[in-house]
Image 1 (cartoon, one colour):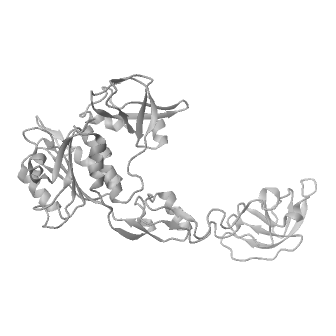
Image 2 (cartoon, one colour):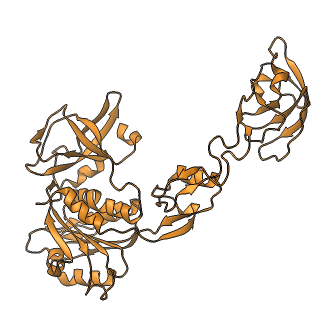
Image 3 (cartoon, helix red, strand yellow):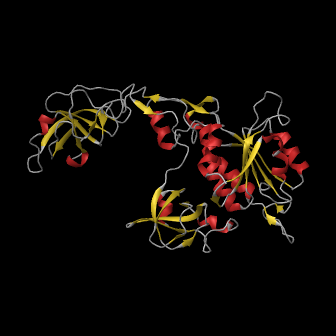
Length: 419
């Protein structure tokens, strides 16, 4: 058997970033940014009011109090978006709304709550120190300041910052074109009645959904029987259309394993036993002739185990980093964090365990327990509905006991983890 790191290194060594394209910000959500971006505008672009109230000269209201209010003449009215820059002399103020540019002669904002709300004349009942409630132009970013690094994911917050700093488009990596093929004569479409020996095809939905969640453009999602001719036809049809083909099933030592039978000859796809549980049988490589023309670069191919939990773990450990690397992500592997085991569970001898887990954040810290009541099992697909991450247990650990500290990867948000 080979180590997980060895298999992942092979995958990443074969993975090259895809070409980039420029898209509108509205189309960039979830994509990986392919350029280092600096601010075009100051943030904020204008010195503006942080409150609804009155723009004043601080000296004019220094002695204001409820017992001895200061009365000022209101000489301008400035809603948000106003371009006026009215002059303010001694004893004068401008009524101003949140976000409106502050007049050059003003150096403080008095909140409306500290006034009588006057329109022509206003009584101020509280002093305002110079700079009070003023947002200074460029206090967040100035033109040329770093904004977003290449390799960052364009989430909602990043897109907001880009728009605010003057961008309408951005360069992103092209989405990886991915096809998913679930193999197995026993598979039937979800929702169809089952005859003896049949099972619902959950793998094609599982893997295609995971691929889409990680930036893939789905070219096709297929289900084929264990007849090698069916798989051969599918691969011929997809080989020139995809960057990645992910297959599930047919990669172990069984008598009816079409993926291994079809792709082993010629060494285009190597099949290995990886020291992990679940997910020991793994296939990976790149298609060449006869699937594509001589000299053409064929798609990357992953052969994942057919048991659903094995396929889930294998995708997260090997396919997900590949998809991220194809998109030029600066981080391709998820960070781990330490968690305390709430209960004990068994571990496989001599193999690293990847256990679907329920990870919780409490006042006492992070805790973890198996998602399945029966613990680890590559067929316990129902337990995936309760998993918001997985625990990683080293091959030398014979058993996890309650109270032990283990490494975990959380896949959902901290809010979800508290449920």
